[in-house]
Image (cartoon, rainbow, N blue to C red; front, side, top):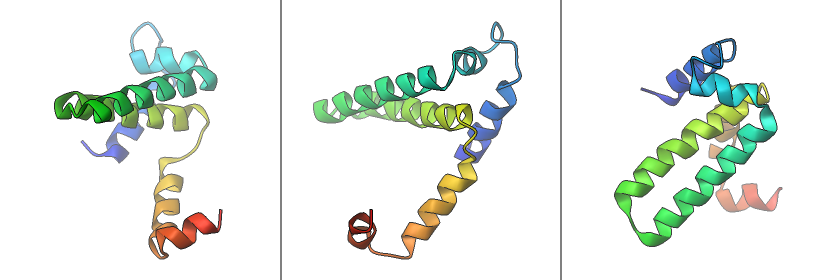
Length: 101
């Protein structure tokens, strides 16, 4: 599965019955709840990275990616826009990009 595949699945669940899909349930709760869940998962990933638990970090990283894509979908931000932004940044030094913010 690619992240593009996962995002497409998430988008397809936007119109699903919330009783039939965790993604549909989350999206039905609104963008703020989706953002909250993303933050929770990010914190859990940080904890596992600090603990140096590679198995748990792998699992939490998958949760972070999923919830990031759900949050993007909740705000109607196309995943391709994120990929385009990464491509734009690839043409310059990370230090330069950060200084330009």
